[in-house]
Image 1 (cartoon, rainbow, N blue to C red):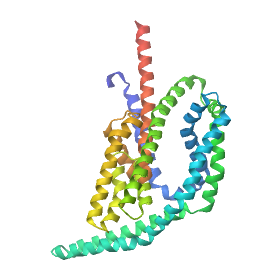
Image 2 (cartoon, one colour):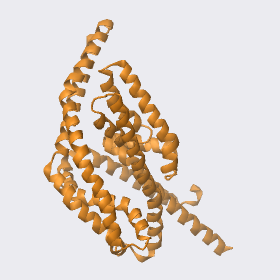
Image 3 (cartoon, helix red, strand yellow):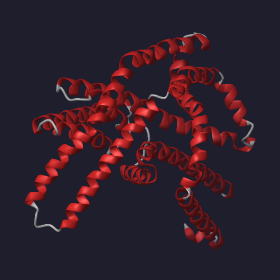
Image 4 (cartoon, rainbow, N blue to C red):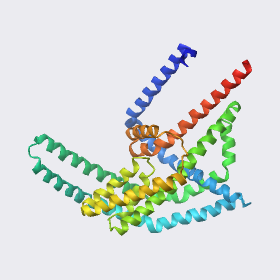
Length: 364
């Protein structure tokens, strides 16, 4: 394959790859300097991104209702009644309970850390032969964990209690979702103006391929994660585990992360259960195992299926890179970004192969 390529052409793409890598590295290293600007832009554009995401998820439902000769406006109204009804129910019933449990967890966090410290001190006594520096590092480690966990929970409480953000969600986002659903064709026609007509067909194929893979994956994952949250909350409630709602939402949220998600989501519940009894911790582990067994063997193959067609090794690699670059957010975005990249590369490869076949047939 490389014999057919011009060495200068290969060198050109090698330089482009190196420069791209250096640019990404510089972008990550200089983030603190322009983080404030990005934070401002994110706060401004977040309602648009979130509304676009919600409209993207609801559009197939609107199309299905519209296929029964129901006008688009009425179809959107039906979706709003059902969707907003669920949101209002969640705000009235789930939100106050979630906030109360999260606040209680924040207040009890030092006590949990203290319990684990007592366990560590017992280990100290049985490991007195170790150098004192090892014990000092363990003390510093627990101090850092306590500080970071406290800061994380405090930031989370502050973010979900901001009145302005709640007003934006309640008022602005539904309006934006309505217009995104209603005027999708007009928005597509406007975007087409920015793409040369020569590339319209290829752009359509790429976007259609991404929508087919990524859309099915995200919608399926949302349904599966909803099941995981409900099943986890029900199980934790009957096990009388504290902060069942918070832990169940964490479990459903992390379920979006393939392979590592269930482990990350189970750790907080296991840590809290261990402060009560070993027996409760064992029951929590069994509960998580059974729920994940049902999810991975029955629900995911049926609902999500193999919609992304990516090898597990590539997914794990993307998760490791995403975790290093963006933490939990990076883990959540790793698979969708990998899916988009994979579909773009696949479509370009398909187009290249088609051109080669056409060229060969012409020469023959």
